[in-house]
Length: 223
Image 1 (cartoon, helix red, strand yellow):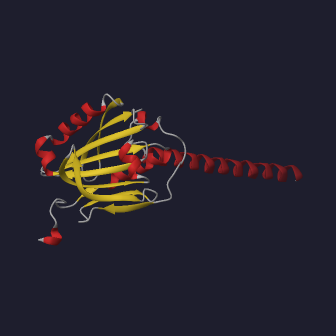
Image 2 (tube, helix red, strand yellow):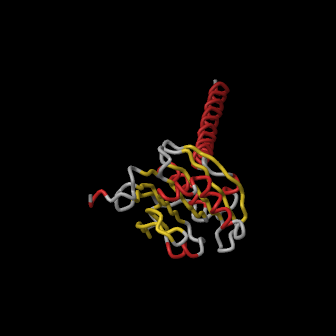
Image 3 (cartoon, one colour):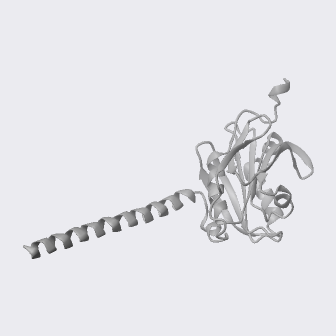
């Protein structure tokens, strides 16, 4: 009788260990799946060229232009935010929104993580989305290592982007992205700098959330 009880106890302990193992493995699989989902837009060259700290941001917030037509989600820590007339190569070409923890550093050296999104009719006519990528590539090829061109589709746009690393200004990773409105009349341009593991999630959030509603170059409040 004692042997039967002992066997039953051992069997029950084995079952509990198996359940515990499945639970741990399930969590590990869930974590890996979550990581893969978070980085679904990113090339492997970007994943291997970031520092580990910080691993995550505290949260995300919606930022927009003054007309509430350019919208995207950025980390709460990117609280240095600007919007206004977009100056490109010395000309006013449209409207932009930029966010970073330090925009001065982001603009000057690109060693600070952040994002700039610009919207332009004139650049759509002059260059188009492919031409803008080519123009940026000519400017950056002497300063950075070019890693390639990539495509992705979110729920709003089909986007192409170029990835640059190890730029002379100190940028570990620079993404230059272009797409257009459905009627092809508006160019949408993004420049994103990533430095840390946390920025990978930020890129994914930006790429999943950015949207241009209506025409940001038209001031509806003064019509």
